[in-house]
Image (spheres, rainbow, N blue to C red):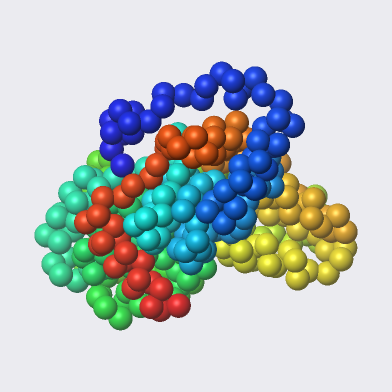
Length: 368
């Protein structure tokens, strides 16, 4: 969505009256509207959301799961997505045209998704085709904009999640000799490494300098990694690992594959958000864990497992700042606008963009 269009069609900011309401008043208003709208309203909430918001979620999960659940909920006329912009876009792509998707705060973006815009990507693709010919297939993490998903779909590629990335990278190599992995270099590197591709067979595309970063003969390259990252997961460090090993030698370290290769390599386990949650759920009482992922989720896991010793791998981590844009006042403001018949913060993906993005999503879903 073009930022100028957003500014021109959306309210400029949260009205003061929502800032002045007490927590109890805000919570009561959410309950009132949920009861009034019933099945016509559906609130999906991402794992990284604040507790004040997640308490009202009708479903929790990762971005793709929530978009799929939203699409399956054909009774819902209004889907208020508590997450970030690209997640709401995916929900709009997969839901029916008469279903409306909203984002409570339009400032809730994703720094990783923003690291690959369509103009940079199209320029990069032109140069990469000049270097490698028709030997490349693009893949994109679902943590990307609708425009990037559309580009990938148009060029024969697919989306991936952190859960199915290995399967989709293997699929990509069945189609072409090389792949371009957008926008998270760390997930791409960790995934390719796990299936046996050497680090010396991976190059990095720098979208700022508009150039390929690689030492060696380019015909050796199998994977081109977009130079993007998650600002949360990149902050878990090798030093954090060493400190936990020294202080808690019996503690298992589990991290998200958006962490760097060095951190993943030194950890005991690595996997998607759901993988982390399920691993802790299945662990024995009294077990000890250091978790390398977003702080809101880590705190929630700690609360849910008082019989286990659980810490954040980085004790100085902050929650995802963009994800935390969604708070109780913005949720109530969004719900009030729907109840009053003047909804705002509507997420609408261009029809052609959505069509090609759905191709990328469907190619992934066909492999599931």
